[in-house]
Image (cartoon, rainbow over all chains, first blue to last red; front, side, top):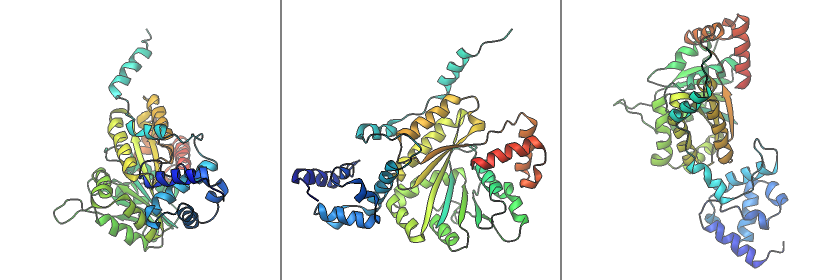
Length: 115
Length: 238
């Protein structure tokens, strides 16, 4: 695998940043086939070797969860595939449920009394 | 692999026990599926799933995770799961009471990390699925906030399924759309949105169903065509 040094450094920095979406760049340097086939621990080992990472730098469970979601994205999913976008993926955290009282007012205007 | 299904919601009256009842009806004859009432305050499932006790073998269990001072002892949950893991069931449905559900996020954020709970799942060679019940109407905001809190704490490490209690959303269809919108935005954290409980208690069928639930009756009690058909539809959903 012929990887550009700049790509490797970018991906490495992202993974070590401990920020949300740290594995998102991995698919830029690893083809789908390498990520979706083989046991997760082997995939992880390949990434650690390719990026010269300390084996303890990646939380295994976090990586396995990401890999599982990645594989699901590549296959059939319940929801339309969404382009990885840090802003969009954080949106749910600020989601606020509707206030039931304000909804009742909306329904009042829809209802008409039949005389 | 054994699967533990946690039916949870800290907002009381949301429909956790109804969901558990429907799941029990579905697996009434399956000896490899067990049901646990982890609700020491109301013990609703112990009453509603009484029909399971009429069979040979024990498939309905009641557990409390209170300490000697009647406070919930969160760590006891680990012992409970370990104990059930040693039994021969393939699937175990646990109906958490509202107070017990309320303590669950604290278990992952104060006592242990979610990564440690994940390790525990791996150690048991099991799978944990969180069935979070949402109710519409006055309980909506509180039940939604519980879901959001649990989703944040779980960090996508466990499957979370949203279960909409249709009976409570009957006058609020827009809220159903909102729940789907949230699940879409939280893709990767929320597995799917499912529905149950499309039962109209003002109708004869609804009254028969609620009466059978109250008396802890199984599938054989549903003889009236309308009630039987509705229950059949509900079982297909779970």
